[in-house]
Amino acid sequence: MSPYRAVIFDMDGVLVDSEPAYFEAVNEVLQPTGKQIDWEQYQQLLGTSITTTWQSVVKMLGIEADLEAFKEQYNDVILKVLARPRPLLPSVKALIAELRQRGASIGLATSSRQAWVEAVLSAVELPLDTFDAVVWRQMAERSKPAPDLYLKAAELVGVSPESCVAIEDTPSGIAAAKAAGMYAVQVRAASTAFPPIEQADLVLDSLEDFPLTLVAAE
Figure 1 (tube, rainbow, N blue to C red):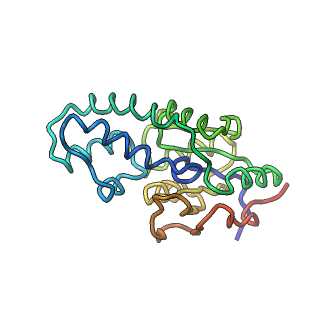
Figure 2: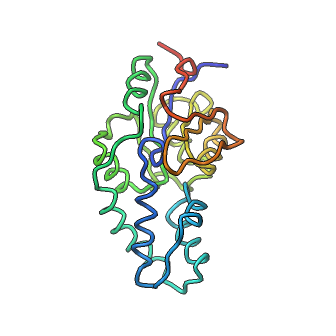
């Protein structure tokens, strides 16, 4: 197994157990319609873009609605919810510190919008400059499962995609990483953890189990 030179993290479900916040925000926006989406339905939307999420919600619930108005309301609500203090998932800071010691480049590639990323990282007290590059939804043409966000992250950290490890938690995220040509690791530490994803190259129950031998030491 060839050593890799960079590790690109997803955010929601990898660094922070934040997906329940998105679920809460969706149902807060839906409240005036008299309809709610249940957790089983919402799980089908994990890792998708805001547009895909709301297209799916409207279809699932049979709502006649202005999609753009829903998305605008959702953005306001989710910013409020994401700003609440919450802990990092186990071993996040320890793994980042160990990767730094090995001289690895570290990136973040998320389908979340810039304001959401800033809100989440601020709430967990993880500065943006923890990463050599941060890529959010507005920085790529297509969201996951397309490879665009990961390809942009590789470009910004200056490492070829084939020399990057991507750490993900959802099927769409793993698909995006694989489409980018990266070594894809699924971590199952969040409350929203999926069963092992067949397409993943490696499945971990915690970042504590990340094999540092994957990453070349300087």
